[in-house]
Image 1 (spheres, one colour):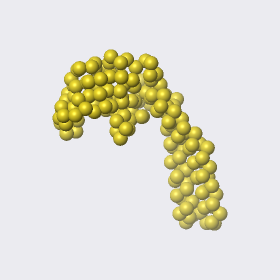
Image 2 (cartoon, rainbow, N blue to C red):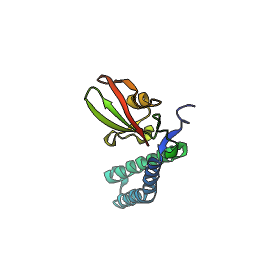
Image 3 (cartoon, rainbow, N blue to C red):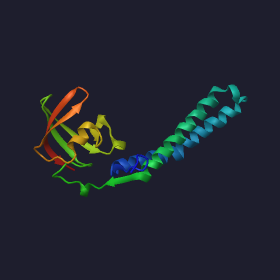
Image 4 (cartoon, helix red, strand yellow):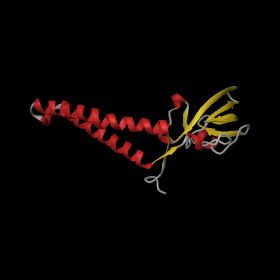
Length: 160
């Protein structure tokens, strides 16, 4: 399967979030940008009209984002919570690990790359830590190549 046809793994929450963003872009943002273009045209000569150029650029970005989101939804495979194995790390798992380097526990939700958000501790199954955790079980230890060197974790808990 080439990268253009690759399935995009999403939780239901992630799918809903993309669907909502798409709806807002199509129903609200598109109209706002069209209104700004219409206003800018009313100013007259569009050949040297910065407002017009800016609105047209924004329109292109909005349309590009709409296409990207539609494509993501078309390729989406929703990970159902009841399918998440609590004995092994999979996409959709919430994993509590002990980080030996920092001598502390950390908790990550393993998600598809489209949903990754490090600020919410949602890490991609394709990231170094995420891919190292996939398929592992409670009490297993893993070494992960990270930009700073090697990180060592012990899986303490797996839940959904």
